[in-house]
Every structure is written in structure tokens, then in C-alpha cells.
Length: 249
Ligand SMILES: Nc1ncnc2c1ncn2[C@@H]1O[C@H](COP(=O)(O)OP(=O)(O)OP(=O)(O)O)[C@@H](O)[C@H]1O
Ligand SMILES: [Mg+2]
Image 1 (tube, rainbow, N blue to C red):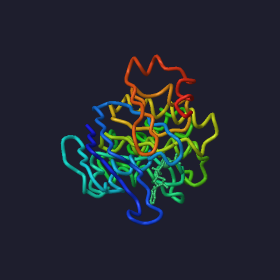
Image 2 (image 1 turned 180 degrees about the vertical axis):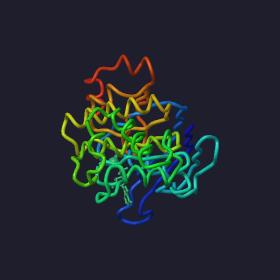
Image 3 (image 1 turned 60 degrees about the horizontal axis):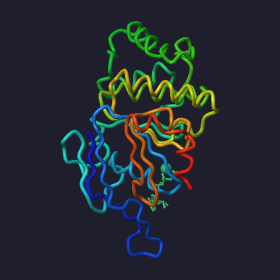
Image 4 (image 1 turned 180 degrees about the horizontal axis):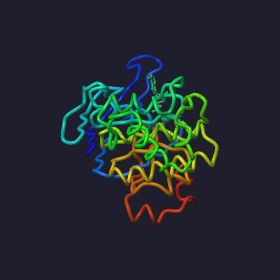
């Protein structure tokens, strides 16, 4: 589904502040894999996600999505495959619009899974139905402006809207970093459920080792722009949280 071959990314090449953010990286992610990435600050995790999304173009190497060569394709041309959720719950939605109108905008933008515009009341019922899955009681607050919701509520709704896009790859860069533990948990569980329900290929970057241990079927540890550990399925299940902690030295 996602294939990276011989990827290098150097920022500020030839200058005093040159950074080799990604070095000779090869990665093959199968369809419906849920890959979790951990690593210290500055190890290249976000750069890797940005390269996959197309917001950064590699200095060398080749990227394929679903057997299409996309190495030099800008991010907006990769949106047929990729949807993203960022760390900041404020990005991705319109704060002054109601929950309902945000869903309406989202449904107009792409062909949303399970949403058809139709009459007002029919659309409202569909949105209510989708939102009730979150178990946050937000289905009764459809007219409330997005900007008045808590970070956790917003992040859960953003996640829901993004997975309803008609694309198969979900990129999550520390989606719960700004949330309290309870909201973070809820958002992670929601993400997990939606990834399974929509059979998505997902990549999660997290500094939360408990989440890295709990979620996903594959775990990667990055340092200095390289993949130092790559643990799959049963081997991942056999890891303990303290194994992960030890990787960080
Ligand atoms: N646009 C850029 N220009 C210059 N250097 C950059 C740029 N983006 C990233 N870097 C550098 O590349 C390296 C990798 O950064 P990256 O953001 O990928 O790390 P990260 O693993 O996501 O870290 P964190 O856990 O702190 O989010 C860092 O040294 C960073 O300073
Ligand atoms: Mg980062």
C-alpha cells in the first residue's frame, strides 16, 4: 500500500545547519496495517509522515502509494489516498461553524462514506447517527459552534470526519498530545475502532509508550532518521512496555 525505497531527506544541504532528517530509509506498509512509530524528539518521525503525505519532497528515493509512483506529487494530489489528523485539535475544522455545518462542508468536499446531503433533516439524522458512535453525547449538540467544544471533543469529531473521507490511508501525528488522559484515551479508542471499521491503513506517531504498546500490529523505533527496530504481529504482542522504554536508552 505504501512503499518507500532509498529515501533521504536533508534540510539546509551544504549549510552550517544541515540536518539529515531521513537517511537511506526503506519501508513497505501493507494494506490495513496499523503502524505505530516511536522515537526521540528530532528522530525524523514527522518528516517521514510528511514525505508520505507529500508536504515534503525527498532529496532522494522513491515513494509509491497503492502502486502509483507519487514521489514528486504534491500533498493535495495525494488526498485521494491520504487523510491526516494533527496534534492541534484546532486544525482541520471551522471554529465558527456548528458541528452540523462542519459535517456539511466535509461532505461537500469529498464523497463521504455513508453521508449524502439530501434534505436537511435526513442529513442531520445521518450525522447524528455517525456522531453517536463516539459516545460523547455530541449528537445532541449539533448546532453548537466547533470552537466552543473541548480539545478532546473536537479531536474526536475531526477524526470522525477525516476517516469518512473516501481514502484508505490515515496519518496520525501525535493526535492526543494536547489532550487530558481521559480524552486522549477516548480519541485513541475511537481511532482504533474507525480504523478497523473502515479497513484503513494507518500510521500513528506517539510519545505515549502505553498507546504504542496497545495499538497497531506493527511498531517502528526511529533514531537519527533511520528505522532501528521494526516489530510485527506476534512479536509485537510479546513486547512489554518496559522493552519499549529500554529502546530509548
Ligand atoms: N522544515 C525543516 N527545516 C529544517 N529542518 C527541519 C525541518 N523539518 C524538520 N527538520 C529537522 O529534521 C529533524 C527531524 O525532525 P522531525 O520533525 O521529523 O522529528 P520528530 O521525530 O517528529 O520529532 P518530535 O518527536 O519532536 O515531533 C530535526 O532535527 C528537525 O529539526
Ligand atoms: Mg514530530
